[in-house]
Length: 395
Image 1 (cartoon, one colour):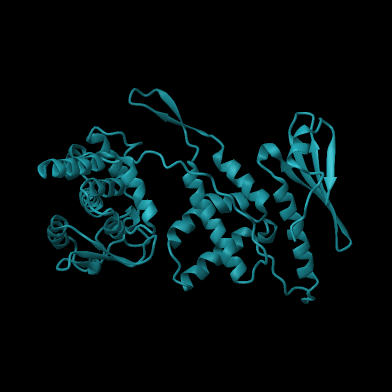
Image 2 (tube, rainbow, N blue to C red; image 1 turned 90 degrees about the vertical axis):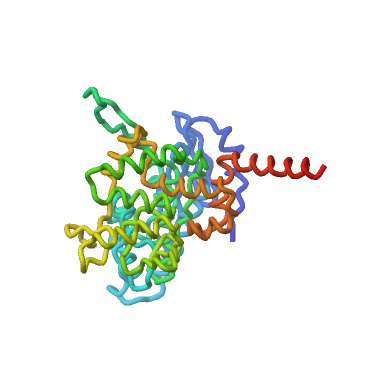
């Protein structure tokens, strides 16, 4: 049952003088000398007194998180009273849980396991490490968000050799993808019986922002530069990206057996939103017919890489940046995913209906496709011009 607070009201906490505190339901709110507000708890749980500092307002800690913390430790105490024999109850660390989570997702044919593994290994496991999974609360999640949002300057050099510094703080959307992974991990951990409660995870509000895409002239320049580049794989990568709107990982993991040139489709067994058949253009079908002939016989991949653990290329960042620069574009602005944005945007501007674009781009919801329709109103104005022309012709 939700607790009702009479003392710990928002207005009362705001008006609190420095050095003064309010206590209610085992939760203490203190206004410190520097003006910051600090939450802590002091409760009895199964004969043990638990006194713990939850955190400060400046760390975005709220009264709700203090309430959640008390609820969690009381639930854990009830679990301990179930009478399980000593040694039977295993407490997993976050790292151990993450490894088991990835392994069990494989058995369940889970989606985007590579992406989840990358986010866990690069960011989540280094932060949470050996922290017991059952001890991770909303407060620790907020700490992670604050840590990831911390600005860090990356040193680099410009064309003259002078040192420059660039803010590498990830965008809210990037962190939200990481939060989605840990949220799914907790959800599955609860389903598998590892935990009984999962922390509430609040994601950042994302700014839809301006979608970057290439103009027709820029597309031509990029293709020409890709064709002239020394990498044998960058040209087919660019052509496939522009003609399909496929994501980079899906392009690089295409198998020759999954290409049906007669039906003009590429079968994608595992994508971000599940398996699907990707339609392709006549131009791309003709290109692929010639490209496949030039590949080594017996190799199953469209982008083979014998040195790779997977057998195929997994990253094409360096040649892509090189080609973008050669085309006179900014490689920090035009990234590999820009090819996907470009294909979808031009479909919208060509007047293709959004449900059809959703089918081509394999977006999960129509709302995600509508972002592209809102970014550029040129095609909308053209539609209104057609309406005006029709009215005038009927006069």
